[in-house]
Amino acid sequence: MIVTSQPRAEMALSAALKSGPSHAYLFRGPRGAGKRDAARAFAAEILAGAAEDEEDARRRALLDPSPHPDLVWLAPKGAQHMVEEVREQVIRASAYRPYEGGKRVFVIEAAETMRDESQNAMLKTLEEPPEFVHLILLTAEPAALLETIASRCQPVDFAPLPPEAVEAALQGDTAGGVDANEAAAAARLSAGDVELARVLLGAPGRKLRGEAEGFAAAALGEGGAASSWQAMLKSAERAGEEAESAVREALEEEKEAGMKRSARDIADASKRAGRRRRTDLLDLGLSLVAAWFRDLAATASGAADVAYNRDRLAALQSQAAGLDPSSARRAAELVQDTRRRLDLNVSEELALEALSFRLAAVLG
Image 1 (cartoon, one colour):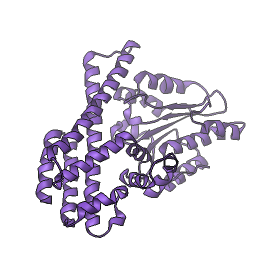
Image 2: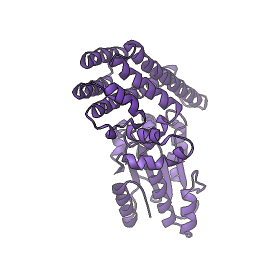
Image 3: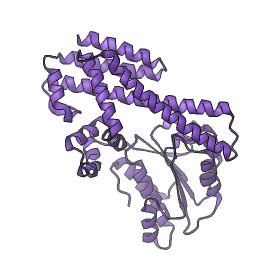
Image 4: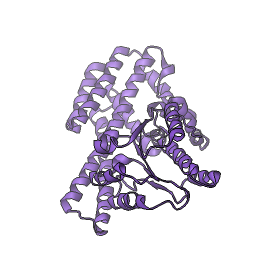
């Protein structure tokens, strides 16, 4: 039996087990929505159903990491899946018969981080897999997968978790010393993403929240506007440089292992990964700024109880004193508009500088 916090996905997977599972699935939904746990439970049921000792097969498949020889779980070691690992551990390995029982299950976590080369190489496996093979691809960014890959998989959708479910998942963190109000704020700011909520509870997340709040405070006239958005941009740039370095190192390892990689290919792929990481972190920072203005509007309207940043109520109430709620709402809209502009590859520095001026004009 599959038990998840996603009723629709649970129903779809339970029905699949009754009728006979398909050869390939695409679990798609935001990070932290429970795709990984659901995939492990689904794989365990597939393997148990084809085993002589169902309970033992299920027990071993549910362990993480799993010692079951017919469950192959591939997660990226860095910013991307290495091409050779996909070829050896999934594409070629799927041709081998089960070591025990009658099924083999291959799970590819963060499938969107497979390069086009790996995705194209998987097409034949997805089109004509051996009858004993089942593939489960997990992705938080389905648009990053080739259409030829997505179209060959049966989709299973996962919705963002409600704040209460995220808070429940964070209970272990609060037991470890995390403030309950901070955990409640992280649950709401994460938009249903447990993993992101945990990031926000860590040192990098707290730093980013501080930069976002500094940006908002500067727009309200409480500090240097330029230095506030520059701090956020510098943090994103550092994260991008780290991602670029990690991908370059992974590609160099592939080259040394015999993969054909030109210096230009390595440089281009590394730069793309760096840009993506930088933009993602900047987008997260701006989403936190927008959430702050949203909370200011709510607080100024006398509805502080619906604030996301419930661990910062004193600061919100201080800034909301005498503030026109409509101005705060308009400020949140401007931030969201800047996030959309970043998707169009505009200059990040110019976009943030322009946002700073627009916010100052709206907030007076």
